[in-house]
Image (cartoon, rainbow, N blue to C red; front, side, top):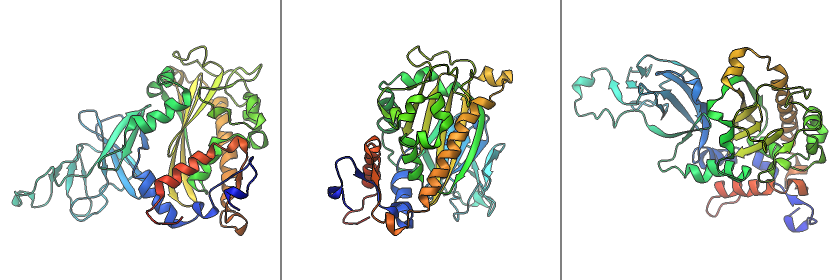
Amino acid sequence: MTATDLPPSLMATLPGHFYTDPAIFALEQSQIFEAGWFCAVRAADLPNPGSFETVQVGRESVLIARGRDGALNAFLNVCRHRGARVCTEDSGSVKRSFQCPYHAWTYGLDGKLIAAPNLTGMPDIDRVEYGLTKVALKEYLGYAWVCLEDEPPSFEDTVVADVTNRLGGSTEIDAYRVDELALGRRIEYDVKANWKQIIENFMECYHCATIHPELTEVLPEFANGFAAQYYVGHGAEFGEGVQGFTVDGSAGVDRLPGVGEHQDRRYYAITIRPQVFVNLVPDHVIVHRMFPLAPDRTIVRCDWLYLPEVIESGKDLTRSIELFHRVNLQDFEACERCQLAMDSRAYARGGVLVPSEHHIGEFHDWVRGKIATPGGTL
């Protein structure tokens, strides 16, 4: 099957091996996750000088820590002496420095080499030059985004542009004050599927009437199979009688003060390539971060964010969190079911996209363009 064999209503997908081939996954790691901006940690998770988290970005372990000046810094988690991993814990806090457990080379929170056995006997060593390898970092929407490239792509033309293009304006996201919200709940999902399966699922609602009964009760227009969340500037409207974005349509919590009347009682979904989803509703924000670990395994961390005073008040958030938790479970089960067939001879040349999924073709083109090799075939 080729694109020219298909009727006008259908478009070809990526072939199955794009979801299982270790060589393609290696290209995605180097050309997508390591070459672009990657949403690594929530800034508020590192509240004090010395707070740190290690994150897998493509093939690299990245160490992100808050410095003594209050700023976040990111480094490759590799000792400059013999290449040992400096920090072996996922998260924690240190007082003043990170010490490699192999030969005790010690680095400040700014990455500078500050101590090593017999270092005073080696006065020719530049302590900055032999410090930890720094990684570019920007804060946006309350998260730290990193890029491993020596010359990172424009943050505004990639990350910010994905948000702006979806919402139809550069300031629409500001109403939600995402960087000022507090964490109400975090759930981590270990999904046995390729990261592209998860992106494609999020980008369409052709499946919504089939597997999301709770969501389509709250957002009835999702039941018609069209990806309303991908119309520029459009937010899916709550159904008649629905009071809030909750599992039973009951009232939610305090509305975010910056949300305008045109944003009230509406749900907006944003995909920020390559690994972030942002979901906006009047009283909270849901952020998904994907961490692709293998061709058939992806960790998804999902944060539910609310006004700090809502968290401090102890209000019950169960019904609010439960709606998208169920959506996540339903989606990830579907993705895993698809992943099982990616090596089938029935899917060797791929499948098809119906008209309401045609926009996924642009995502496929983006992936192909990123991992294309001169004279190579995929």
